[in-house]
Length: 289
Image: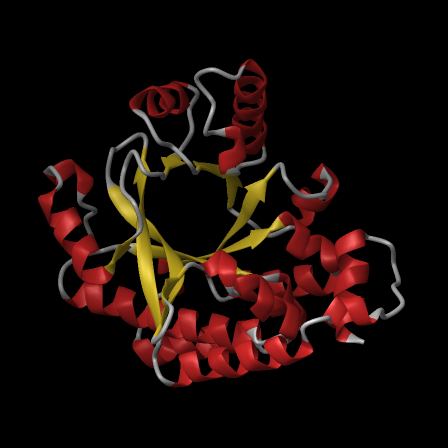
């Protein structure tokens, strides 16, 4: 039933009849799920952080959290190799809770050390349809003594469109906590502007597919400039990801983009390396309290 549900959502058909091909590798699925459960329990998951810089002040005052799996036999496994599976099986809830708890703890630790860095955390469609996410986030903030304003949750367009009513209810409860909310990968999903207007978000993130070829692709330039203007007219901040060179950075800065991230600034780093990177930056790159 779960496999059929996932297929129906992916194809936007409204329904799907189960086919054994949907779960062709049942034994492998069970094995990987067992390994994932062990990964959470045995602290095999690790967090990496990619810096995000403000185009106006040139300061780095936030990072995006990215989870990696340090497998005892296979080494470092990137998220695209296990997150889709976790979403398919529903185990993404446990991974998200782990990521939220460790991220909030890390921000609180940085504050005690004099580094005032906010974090952005990705939230899946599965997370939004479960009612306990807002209460879990609120309890986690209280437990670590952190103000909600230091946390941004990034939600993809498709995650909201899977179940708009329940997703928006969850987003509204999160917004009441003071959590910042961002629409991730904008332009790649199916949401309408009317749907976007109803979402209690403060930020729009332009997908890297529109940014990677920005200096040479005229169509991408039109899309990105129009998106920045539209988002600003709606009172939203704009983040561009996938910035890999100085020319792209300069173009986005000239078009009024608010925040940028990408390899031009830094690759994702584990916490100790990120701290060293931040302290090695010129003073204007360090955020203040």
